[in-house]
Each structure stands twice: as C-alpha cells, then as structure tokens.
Image (tube, rainbow, N blue to C red; front, side, top):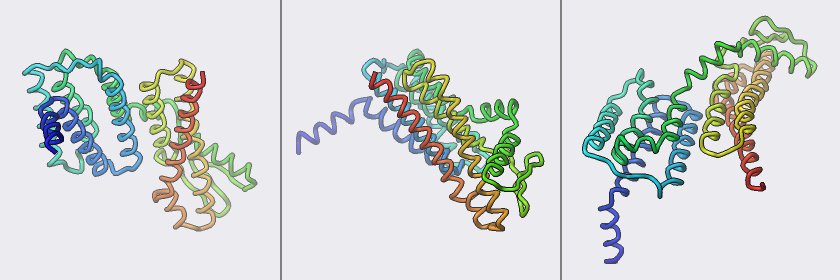
Length: 283
C-alpha cells in the first residue's frame, strides 16, 4: 500500500499528469456544451470522433513532443481556459457560435500551457482538425452556391418512384403522387448528411497517410452516400404522405427515423474507410 501511495503522489507531481487531467476535463466540457446547445446526436458524435482523432495524433507523437513552456505562454493558456470556463457557466441560447469556437480555444489554451507559443507548430494537424470542425457553414455555403441540392433530390426521388412503378410528377422541389406529395427544403435534401460525411472524409485524410487516389475518392464517396441514402428517406416520406400516414411521416421527417438514415450513412462510410485501411494492411 505504501508503494502504491508513493506512486500516486509521484504522478501527481508530474506536469504531464495535470496536462492530461486538464485535457480530459476540457473535452468533457466541450461534449457537454455540444449536447446542450447544438442538440444533435450527429453533432455530438462528430465531435467525439474529432477529439478522439486529436488524442490519437498526440499519442502517436508523444515521445517527440517538446513540452517546454514559459511564464507568458502559460499565463495566456490559463487565461484562455479561465475565460472559457467562466463563459461556459453563463451561456444563453444564442451562444451556439461560442460553443463551436470553444473547442479551438480549449486546445489553444492547453497547447500554450504544454509547449508555449514556439511549440504551437507541433500541433498543426490538430489545429487543422479543429478548424475543419468550424468550417460547417463554409462547406454548406459552397455546396449551396454551386448546387441546388433540393432540385437534385426532387429529381432523383421522382425517378426512383417512377422506376418503382408509381405515377409521379415533379414541380420544382415538389414530388407529387396522385394522393399527396412533399416539398423538399434544403434541410431535407440530404445536406446535413453530406456535411457530416464530408467532415469525416477530411478527418480521415488528415489522420491516416493514404494515397492521392483515396484522398480524392473519399469526399466523392461521402457526397454520394449522403445524397443517395437520403433519397430513399424522401421516397419513403412521399409514400407515407400519399397514404395519409402523417404520424409515420413525422417520425421519418423529424423524429428518430431521420437519425436512422443518418446513422446508416455514417456506418456505410465508416465501412468504406475500414476497407481502405485494409488495403494498406494487406499491401
């Protein structure tokens, strides 16, 4: 027991122990804030994956990291974390933007404490991953400015219904059956699923050393899976509206059913990533 107690005291005296403790605490706070203010299971899952990737990258290069800071850097790091903690205690419903950038603030503060201003260059990959997490609006803006996803979704949904033998027509973003139809807004067009899978594809590219072909292929596969899997959700909702099953429509539109299709698209993409990694293992 004495030896065990001595080891615990010895560990408590090491800076690395406190750095790990602060990191774990900050990550828990980030996930809690995401759960409360973003209120999306997909968003929380994505953040878990992003933080797991950051921890994985740091663990890989742990023996080569320079953990030497200075008084100014340490003070700045502690100040950033202090401001973050204080602000986290008094967040309002419109502070979702702060929640998004707080991940970057957390890691910047921790990196300053661990390695100082001069050592920030060691964490370029990690900062890139966190910037990627903040790029949701930029990615959505790029897609919306170059593609009318609602029209594309309406066209493909109409084609699938026609192929299945239904009498279907389309008017703009409206998919119409003889007894009812749906209007496809951007939020229902598959944009969210595409965004999630694009983020995962870029995350995979940053974390794993893969060939150029796979780096080009992954974002394309992400867009394809996110769009196509959502098409089947739209087809199902159209059929439910035509059958006057409004309860079923709401379930697949905004209820747990919408998460099922989103989860399925993520699992399909994860399988593609797993398949790519297997190619390198067998090579």
